Every structure is written in C-alpha cells, then in structure tokens.
Length: 113
Image 1 (cartoon, helix red, strand yellow):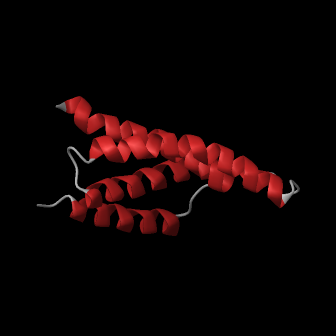
Image 2 (cartoon, helix red, strand yellow):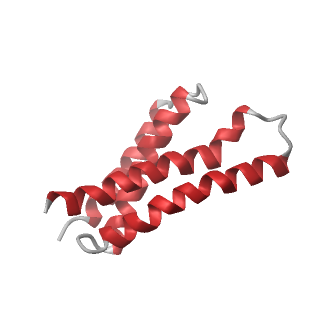
C-alpha cells in the first residue's frame, strides 16, 4: 500500500529537518557557550528520534534495513543542501553536488534486486 511506503519517507524527512538543526543550527551562533549549544542540540535531537525510530520501525515492514539507511542518507543530503543555502547562507558548489550525486547513486544501487 502507498501509505506503508510513503509514511517512513515522510517521517525520515521530518527527522532529518530536526537532526540538521541539532547538528548544524548552532553554527550561526558561534558566541553561544558550547554547553548551551550541546544541551539545545540534545533537546532538538529528542524530536528527531521521535520521528526516526517510528520511520525505521514502520519502514522495516516494506523496506530492508540497508534500503532504509540508503533513503535516510539521500534525504539527509537533500535537507542539508537546502539548510546550508537557506539557513547558513552557504550554497553548495559543484563539487559538493557531485559528491552528493555519487552518494545518491550508491543509495540507488541498494534498491536493485
């Protein structure tokens, strides 16, 4: 069923938005004390886990673990690319896109039967 296949992807997308903010959002606030940044990142990561764990649990009914991981990597790169350009104001260069494309090809290979 479509929802069984789509739900894990949407949950992975949401979890990666939280993860990206937890890991990289603090880069705009370099004067904030490190301990504060760590605690804020952990708080944000809680929401990431609340989406990632169900994504993998529900997704394992229709996808293999390697397929879930491959999807997660591609989604992470797409979310990060947008985040880098929009939030950090650091658009990706051609070599970044080329490297990401190679990772996307690797993820595609995982889906071959």
